[in-house]
Length: 411
Image (cartoon, rainbow, N blue to C red; front, side, top):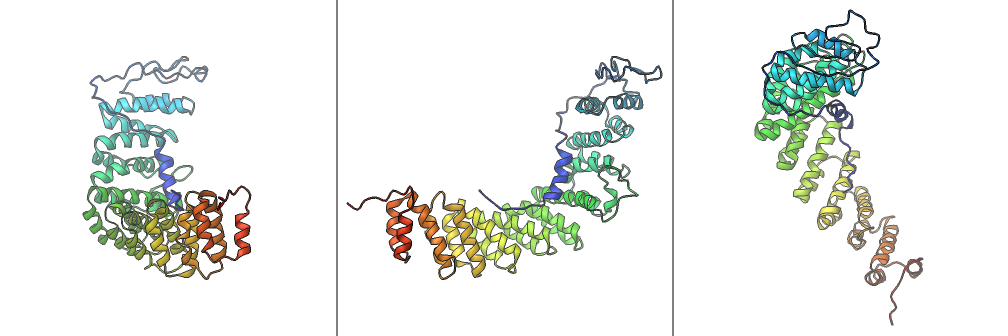
C-alpha cells in the first residue's frame, strides 16, 4: 500500500534515537550476596600505564572483582574503559546485577557516572525499573536534577509510566518547562531555552506516548481528560496520542478530538491518522468528514492518501468517493493518483473513474493512458471498450499500433 503519509517525523525520531539503544532485559530473582564477583572487564592495553593509585580491584589485566559496597570506585573503574559497546555492555551487566539486589544501589551507580555513559545507563535503569515498578521508577526519575541523563530516563520510562498512571505522567510533563528536558551535548538546565525546539520535541513526544497509552488503557477516561487542559501545544500533543488509538476503535470520537485541536501540523497529522483508519472501516463516513475541512493543502493531500488506501483495499468504494468528490481540481488530481495506483495491475478499474474528469483537459490524456495499459493486459476486452470511448480514429489507430501490442484477429 502506497500512502503519502508524513507523520511527526522529527519528534518520533527523538524517541527512537534514545530508545533503540536499549533492549529491555529479562529480570531474574534477587541475589542475597553483598559482593558481585568476577565481573570481568577486559581492557588490555588501556590499563598498561595504570598507576598504583588506581581504584581497588584494578590491574593491568583488567578489573578482577567489583565490590557492590564501593559504588563510586566501581564507576571509576568502568569509566576507565574506552568508550565503546564493550564499556556500555559491561556497565549495564553490572547495573542489572545491582538492580536485582537493590534499585537504590543501581541508582547510585548511575549518579556516579559521567556523560555519555550516565545517559545510557539512566535509560537502561529506567527501562528495567519501569517494567518492575513504574511508579517507583517515576519517583526516582522525576526527582533527578534536570540533565540529559534524566531526560533519557524519562523517555525510556514514559510508556510504562503512562500505562500505570497516565494522569500523573501527563501532569508532570505538562507542568515541567522545556528547560527541564535537555537532551545532551553542552546543554544544561541553565542554558536550555524554554523555546528550544529539541526540548519541546521531547515533551511533545512524551505527551503523545502518554495519550496513546491512556487511550489503550481506558479510552473513555482519556477522551474526557482533555477537558482539563488549556488549549495549546501540550494539549494538542496529548490529543494526538489519544486519537492515534481512538482512530481504530472509535474514529468518530477521534474526529471530535481532532476538531478541538489548534489548526496546524499536529492537527493535520492527527486528522490524517483518523481519516485513514475511518476509511478502512467506513470509507463514506471518512470521506464525508474530510469534506468538512476547508479546501487547501491538507485536504488535497488527505484525499490522495485516502484514494491510495481505498485503491488497494476497497476499489468500489474508491470509485464512489472519487466520482462524488465536490471540488473539480481536487477530484481530478485524486483520479489521476488513483490511476497511478491501479493501471499497472488492473487497468480496467481506471475506466470506471474517467467520467469524473470528463470535459477537463486531462480527460483525453488519461483515457489514452488507461487504453495503453488495458490493451497490454486484456487486448480483447480493451479493444471493445476503446471503440466506445469517443476517441477519434487517428488516436485509436495510434494506440493500436503501439510496439509489442498483440491485437487479436477478427477472423
